[in-house]
Image (cartoon, rainbow, N blue to C red; front, side, top):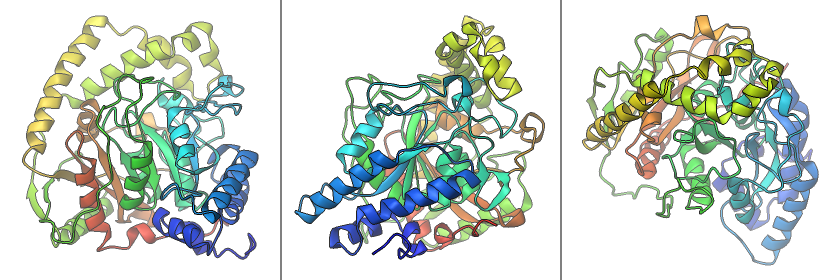
Length: 469
């Protein structure tokens, strides 16, 4: 089968289906890899989704996968599956730019732990995907805050992919790879998943080693997955989860993806209707329609978040830790080479944060964790809209046009809780809308079951964006 003979629909299949095809040898990893590489090298530029295509490494890994599969050595569900990784994870001998012009030639002498684990699973690295510079750690106002330019949404290239895992969201949505690795400190997986109409899993803090990945906030950074479905996210998470002596924050317990049994009881879901002060009407309508579907497979009850400064706690922690993480860039003046005007000065203002304010936020964080754990002890997951609006225009000044509180995102990230966003319809201009499931620490399987139950009744995750014009 030639590259051109691969039906485009094949490139939008989920990880399990692709794996079954590879194992049955009805397609090969080299064929898949060539097809995805072609799309990355062409459409990737349309969406500003890719920084570096790793063609030679990808084809070498794909040939190895085909050879191993042919001899019966099947490593698991990701063997031979092509993927992309956000350009904050180190790759030996390949530039790792952190999305920032001053670091465009930065190189590391080993792979990040997440990349090494995926190689051990037999996955094929297609390339380094675009991101907001420094993952937005010094602030940004415009979608153009990236080495590659503004992330352009495959559903409408005049609109943003969301940040900071901008390339990961676009690449999965446009069929440029089977899945992608992203990262979240606050919103950087959930937002692009919602904006691009894909499934995005933010694991529990410490579930995945961050060794070899850029640090923004040591106590809030998490590496996760963007993929076609909740099931795909679970399959990939199992491959990358686990303890790592090189990252003392990792959890010691192993984690395995467990799909819900056919006779499993209905999950109990807490509905957070006031996750945002206001929402676009179309987003609210899509969310209510999603709740109607969930009502057939789950028990729903309304839940209100307490009145607590969740946003302030999360913001203070991130600002304090980011100013330390990027101290060398700030003091050397290299931040002046960043694309975004706020990023150029944000580090200097962040350095003025008082130690007492950071320590107060850390103390309040304990109350956030206790509060969220008490709420989640009564339900299997919380459900809420992933974002109060659809993807925004790429030219929008976000310091003016995206000012709103995000208490659930702030609380979930400050407490290190897992969450998954999955598509639940469309809003203005036929742009995707997402619904998120937030779970108790360590209970990724519960949120995955809830999201999978929803996806078993809907087809939103199977929708594909229009071909670019």
